[in-house]
Length: 379
Image (tube, rainbow, N blue to C red; front, side, top):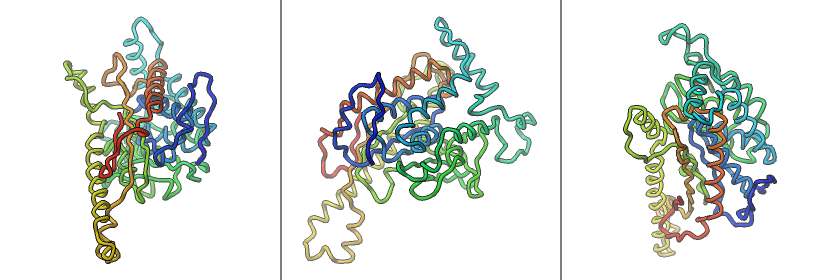
């Protein structure tokens, strides 16, 4: 797919557009509510450098950002991301108080909890009947996401999305079976409901029914959907930008509020490093099988049993470029609902700076690659 660059007056030169990238480009987004502004900055850096992903994968807010990217042609993607994030920050933010930023965030977060975000979610009046009221899974929630459906209808081009010019995958968990499912434009037509299902975090948001089955936010099962590309078939050489907003490692918490924030980080980091470690082991074994096949005498290679066993091997190479959001000063356990304008700007700027740095360094161009290794990490 041809790369398209949008001219922006504050954009640095984009040397990556002239480079040969090591395979398909995959952008992987975690879930994390307001933390998703960081992902917008990451995509902006890629776009400015002339790199348009071949495949974007997301969960929760990551699925919404993924849809805004894949569901629009290249020249409209940043505009649609801008519009979405402007709408949900401008209408929810409390007053900006430079002298007391913590107070400003507190007021805004309280406003979000009480009245929601008009273009995103609003209080569900049925919930006033009490937490034990049998409302049905599509209404048993504190908020209604009907406004999100209207917003996405305005900002997404579903016809373009389903042309699969850029492949999109979003993850959701079946509320009845407890099984994770990845909805993929390569395999089926996707609609607004698939994106909303991936972001239906209970009990805040209601389940979304697809094909008669109720689905919730995939983040409650696995908030790091990198497994979708690492397990994909047929396997392809890939450059994967893995965008993580939650801190897997952090200092020891000292207060109850810090404990609550740390618990959230661990829960939603979703064992990202262990996923990669498992995949590195699997891909190493595949490469070992490929190397062993070369040792088999030519006369035996056509043997049906040899052919069957050799099929487990492969030589694909996955470069994983990790981009992890650095915590902002004053963050607490409510950081994922902090949609204040200043914080959204700061998170986006951080994602932009981190991704620009990674692209400029381009470690995948110079990394020494052992033929036995199938997954190479860059941090």
